[in-house]
Structures are given as structure tokens and as C-alpha cells.
Length: 148
Image (cartoon, rainbow, N blue to C red; front, side, top):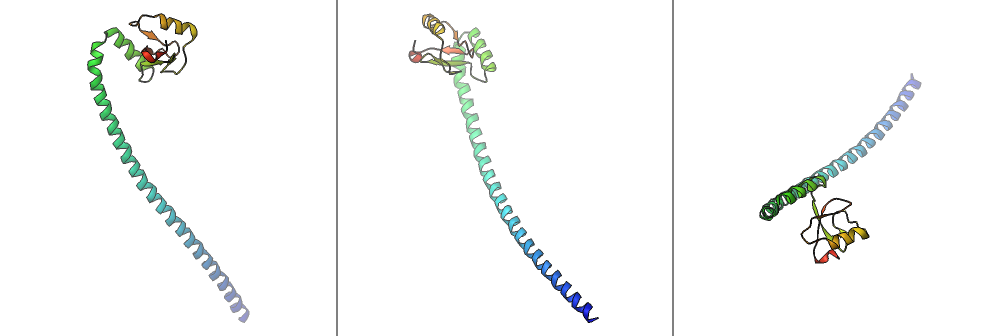
């Protein structure tokens, strides 16, 4: 009986030690959970702030787009219908950009330099001729900076 009591006392001590270890592990895990929850709350606050900035920027972009569309209408009305139809077709195909400036012999749309024969053709073309880039097919807009 005495031996059994000693054996049970040792077993109880071992179980109490294991229980303490488990309680310490639980505390550490709870601390980690609390830290992660705090980080999650911080990230959530940051996300809300970033979304608010994004929404404000989108509103600003939409307002600017609206004003530019309004400013574009009188200019577009002055251009020939077939030229506007061509521009709109290219614009739809090229992701919103139908015309590109010609700068120093380089297309502003695809950023490629015109080949020698193409460059000569563009330089010899009358000012009112509609020219297109051989690579991206955008309408080339010529001015003093065209380099031709």
C-alpha cells in the first residue's frame, strides 16, 4: 500500500509538471495569438486607409476623365468623320491610345524608331496626310519635335 501511494505521488508530480508545461505553452501560444491579432487589426486599419486613398484617387481620376472628355468633344467635332472613325477604331484595338506623337523619328506609341525608308516616306509626306506607324498602326502626330 505504501509503495502504491509513493507511486501515485510520483505520477501526480509528473502529471502536475506536464500540466505546468502545457499551461506555459498555452500562455506562449495565447501571446502569439494576441500579437497576430494586433498585427491583423493594424493591417486592417492600414487596409481601410489605403482603400480610402484609392477610392479618393479613383474619384479624382473619374472627375479628370470627365472634364477631359468634355474638353475633347469640341475638338473632335472639328475633325473629319472618317479620321475620327479611324482614330476610335485604333484606340479600341490599342488599349485606349489611337494616336502617338512622332519624336526624333520614334513613334510615341510603340517607342520604336522608324526605319530609314519609312522615315523618308514620312518626311516626304504632305502635312495634312494621315500617317500610321508600321509597327503599332497608331496615327502618327507630327510637329517640330518629330525630327524630320
